[in-house]
Structures are given as C-alpha cells and as structure tokens.
Length: 467
Ligand code: ADP
Ligand code: MG
Image (tube, rainbow, N blue to C red; front, side):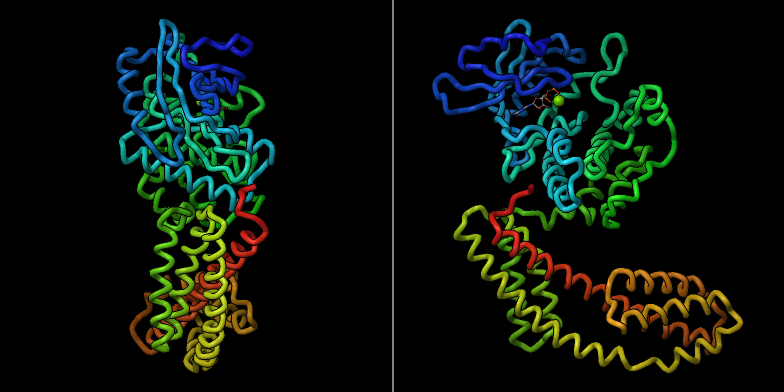
C-alpha cells in the first residue's frame, strides 16, 4: 500500500500532486488531467493486496456500476485504471476537505448546521438504499465537502467496503471501531443496518464534539463497545427533542430494535420533505396559490395555515437558489407572505382568544367532584396551571408540555365508572385537547414565520453559507 511520504505513483494521463489523505485502504492524491490542466481530480490509489474478499475482477465490475451513479451528494467516480499492484480511482475533487476536519476546526456544530448536513447525508443514503448499495464504512473521514465556502456534503468511499473485510488476515480490525456498529465488532455478522448506527455516531460527534465511544485506552473502548448500556446523550448543548429522539434511535445497539431505513428517512428531524431541493420552490408556490384563494374567500384560518405551510418550503427554496436575481425575487415574495400571514394571525388570535376565554363552568364542578381522587385532582390542577400560563401569554413549548402531561394523566384515569363525573371528565379532556391542539398550531406557525424571517435576514446578509 502507498504510504505517506512516498512519491506519488505515475499515471499516463494525469499529473499527480499533493497527497490529500490516507484512509483505511488507500492514499488519495490531487491530480490534473494532462490534456486539460484545468480539470482537477482526486486519484485514489488502492493496493490490490488489501482486497481479500473476492477477486479483483468482481471489484472491477462493481466499480463499473459505481461509475454510472450520479448524485449531488455522492462523490462522482469519473474513471478507473489499474496496473499490477494498484487500482486507481479517478474521482471528483472535493476542495472542502472531510467532515472530520470540519468538525475539529469548529469543535461542535450548531444543531441547525448538523441538520443540513444530515439531510444531505440522508439524501445520499436514500439513493444508495434504493440502488441496494450499503456503505459499511460511514465515518466523518469518508464524508467530504465540495468547497470551503457554502459546502455541500459528498459521500465517498462507498460500495467498496463489502469487498474489504473489516478484519485483516490476522483477524485484526481495520479502520476505526469508534464508528462501527457493535454487532460488526462483536459478532462479525452484520448487514446494511450498520450504516444507520454510524450515522448516529457521526451526528453525535458533530453535536457533542466527540464520538459516543471516545476512550482513553483500547481496554476502555472495548468495554464500551461490548457493554449493553444504553448510549447516554450529554445534557449540553441543549438539543431539540426531535434531534435527541433520532440520536437515541440510531444509537440502538440491537440492530433489530434500531430505527429502520424507512423510519429514518421519514423522521421529523431528517424531514427530507423540507430539505432544499429543486422541487422546494414549486411546492411553495402551489401552496401559496391555495392560500391566496382561501384568503380571497375570507377563510382566514385556512389561509394562514396554508401561508405557513408554504413558508416551510420557501425557506429551503431560498437556500437552494444560487442565482442572485432569482434569489432576490423569492426573497421579495417571502417578505410579502410573511406580512400577510402576520395580519391573518392577528385576526385569528382575536377570534380564538375570545372563544377560549369563555371559562368552562363544568371544570369547577369537576374539581369539586374529584376531591376524593388525589390523582385526578393533581391532573386537573396541572391542566388549570397550563390554562393560566397560556392566558398570561406564555404560549410556548413549556405550556404545551404541561397540557400534554395533564392530558396523559387524565386519559389514564378515564376508566371511571359511568356517571356524571365521567361525562364531565370526557368533556374536560376534549376541551383540553382542543386547547393543546390550538397551542401546537400557534407554535408551529410561529416557527414557520420566524424561520422565514431568519432565512430572509440571513440571505440578505450574504448568500446562505453553512459557516
Ligand atoms: P480509504 O478507502 O482508504 O478510506 P478514502 O476514499 O476515504 O480512502 O480517502 C482517504 C482520505 O483522502 C479522505 O478521508 C479524505 O480526507 C481524502 N480524500 C478522499 N477522496 C477525496 C476527494 N475526492 N477529494 C478530496 N479529498 C479526498
Ligand atoms: Mg476512507
């Protein structure tokens, strides 16, 4: 295998220059095509000796397939060559370095940035999954960035690992067990689901600055891998519940219990539906057309909800657009829709506030009737506290959680003997559910609007960059 410090190998059509990196199996050089010195590529030199699973011929067939793959978040394999010792893969050059370097330079990434990267990674993995290709060696070193400015993530080194056993001839593990699923290290038996574990480790490292099994010694590392303890997430930095949920479900040791690919692609934190794509603008526009229609018909709340849904697509559309003039046009429209949504919101708030303010007389009776049931009493108190908070203007996630907790309790107690108390309890639960639902909509709408405003401000400052 070529090693650091060795002179770059000679290839007929290319001039190889600096060494870009050395991975588990190969050394990668920056290179120029002799015929067109402006074409920069990366040449990956793989030693044939590291291939121990199947014959080189099979690998060459596989590379032929990989060559046909084109995806914005997968490093393009342009061509390949071989000689007696090496296989040379001619690849698209990624000037932004790898994700491991990107994280190290920043120590940790904000959740928002990590999420954009995760969406791009999910997009690449979905494409590979649809083509029945597993990566099997996912780690930050194998995730490259297209450019130092406004970097796009590019998955590298895939479709290859299946030809390379993670164990060498002496049964010593190659590569880094920090990113390998426990079943890969412990049982030497695994399938595509190991990729989801590795996604969890990468996301964990991006957010907390170190992988979950970071250790000072090999013994400590081995203990952590073999243990059956649940992976605990540090309490800081504070992350959204969706993000925590996803991490927990990816970092599930038992591959049978781990989140599935389908669940992963649909998870609210991944939310592939709202990632910046060529379709974002079309989806936003058709929702706005509907919103305007409802607005003209005077259906204020339907119009408001449609404007907000449209904003959820306009934000990624703004991120996606690279042409300055078109970006400006989208920005102007978004500003206009945000203003209209705000006017509508004021109208809707006025209506529903007066509706909610009508106290529920049955609530007091119910409380009286619940005096001999401390658990019911406590749950009703909690509901009253939520209502009081909301009426004070605290219409945030904490209040919503209080509603949801009290509802959870009340629903458990619902198994009451039939009678007046059960009837009242039913009515109360329904009223509380309506309030919680209303609050949830409010929070969602506010988020969509502030996301829109933020994106506007950000894109005004300059074009959207990830840094
Ligand atoms: P291995 O199969 O040996 O792990 P990789 O394909 O992961 O080899 O490449 C090793 C390192 O070389 C990467 O971690 C990255 O830093 C660098 N590298 C690889 N491909 C490219 C590329 N296309 N553009 C820029 N750098 C690259
Ligand atoms: Mg690699």
